[in-house]
Image 1 (cartoon, rainbow over the protein chains, first blue to last red):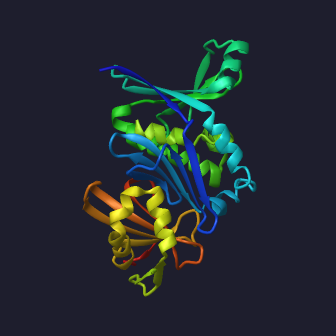
Image 2 (image 1 turned 90 degrees about the vertical axis):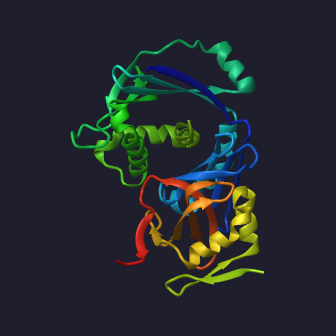
Image 3 (image 1 turned 135 degrees about the vertical axis):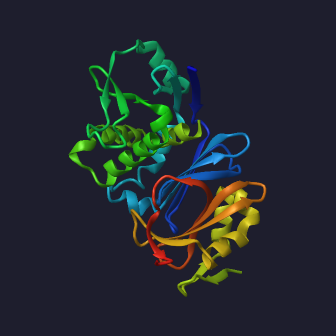
Length: 216
Length: 107
């Protein structure tokens, strides 16, 4: 069975609340609704709505304490990053091919409102050539089945490919999260691509993309 | 009126009304579950020191069913920086990585 699902997410209803006294950041997409969380690590949870299934937001416990280690102005830049996020629309396409047992996830970001119109008018959009690079070259690594797709020549990350998905899918998703988090806090020379994904996410505060992948 | 409960290590943990309002405003499913939060502190399955922030104390308790929410869920309770007051609490369906170092029970 092969399938291709394209889903569009708009963040125009993004809201956030940072309580300095308890150092907890809550990011919501739409009004609060009953949800359960997927705990990515001790400090990060993505909230998924129960009925109907939807991505509700994320909770970061110890936001200032944790992010001060990697970005001293994380708290001050929060309003700016949230504002930028509110003008972003993300389209995710999930393609699975049962012949090769491969899942390809592609992300494309679009601006909403007048920013989007300006971009459409003045920037021609054409499919860019891309390459796939392995997330890990180690044969025993759980990340060996994961490849990141990069455009040429800019080498922007636009997607992820997971081989042997039926066997390695869950551990691959777990591995991606782990590699990305480790590349923030425990960077090594081997995790260049994971670090690039994180940089792309942090620069645009695109953490919700992770949640979308999990929720979809 | 704050709730004060003792965890298995003898630590007294405080859940302030203000904190509870904060929890319920962001996690509305928790509104009828205050007793589960207090029970998680009193009788957790595990107490952890956070992986990225070892000074963060985290309580975890598994429930086979949480009425009106779902099955096989865990309650997590996070203490604040002072190590005494609850900072937040919510339900999790799955944890990708270890929360941190298990400090109770020590086997």
